[in-house]
Amino acid sequence: MVREEEVLKRVRAIFNTSKTSASAAANIVIGNGDDGAVVKLNEGLTILSTDMAVENIHFRRAWSTPQEFGRKITAANLADICAMGGWPEYLLVAVAFPKDYLDDLEDLARGIAEEATKVGASVIGGDLSQGSELVISITAVGRTLRAITRSGAKVGDVVMISHLPGWSKAGLEILSRDLTHASELSQRALMQHRAPQIDYSKYRKVYAALNSATDISDGLLIDSGHIAGASGVALNLQSALIEKAEGFAALQQLAQEFGTGESSGMDFVLSGGEDHVLLVTTSTPEKCEGFIEIGRVEQGEGVLLDGKVVSGEAGYQHHW
Image 1 (cartoon, rainbow, N blue to C red):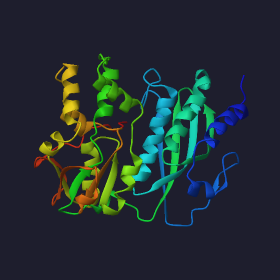
Image 2 (cartoon, rainbow, N blue to C red; image 1 turned 30 degrees about the vertical axis):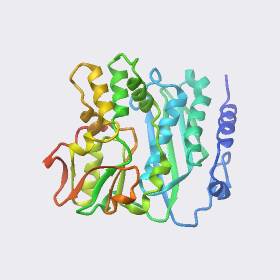
Image 3 (cartoon, rainbow, N blue to C red; image 1 turned 180 degrees about the horizontal axis):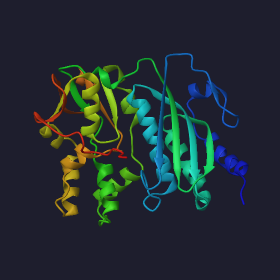
Image 4 (tube, rainbow, N blue to C red; image 1 turned 180 degrees about the vertical axis):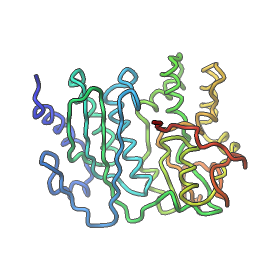
């Protein structure tokens, strides 16, 4: 029998030794360990975002290590803050877990701390509870001087992405269909699905040039639809631009390796979520170094591919 206090002590020790940015650390008045955390947030705007991961819905323990899905759920939260032009500073972590998961809890905490360290964010509190399955909920707090929303796209804007989505979806295909995954491309897809690699600093460098932005968590078509709907415009994506982007040929090759004809590189790009690619529109694309142009903002509504209306259903959404 292990008491909750003992588990919390071990987990807090991991979070308390993770690297926090100097500015974030300086603003912590009361940190992890009290009834609540207290931070000074006097300058700029505060952004808050919450994301939850449920076992057998968002991940499977048989497919990923505790450290990997600790990183994955943390990345989802950090990406949401970054997609609004902010920088993450604090995290609150709540975990419900079955008894047989107790020995893995510290590895989960290490994964969360590892991803948080990439942006200098600090875990300042949370909660633990026993549950029938593993559930992880993280609330992220960040700051910005100017919030970038989905509603700022302008007709004539260039549509761009930080990097090509689809690798996480390819990894999910490999795991869910029990496909052979010996190739280098398959391993790349599996790594991206289990714990996405995100260049957060790349996002930060282009904030001043963006009119609108969103995190691609559900798929390029679905999330393009979010910007189109919020801004009252149409996003016309161009397949030729997508196909010539770095990484597309590799995704196409991987789809061919599957050998079923059910997937293509374009399917992965359009419907793949959880890579946490930053989707943006900008009037000054030359200021978005390293971003990939994939289309234009036009008058109208919805999402188009090569001028033709496409369904926004290709991607991942919960259904009840």
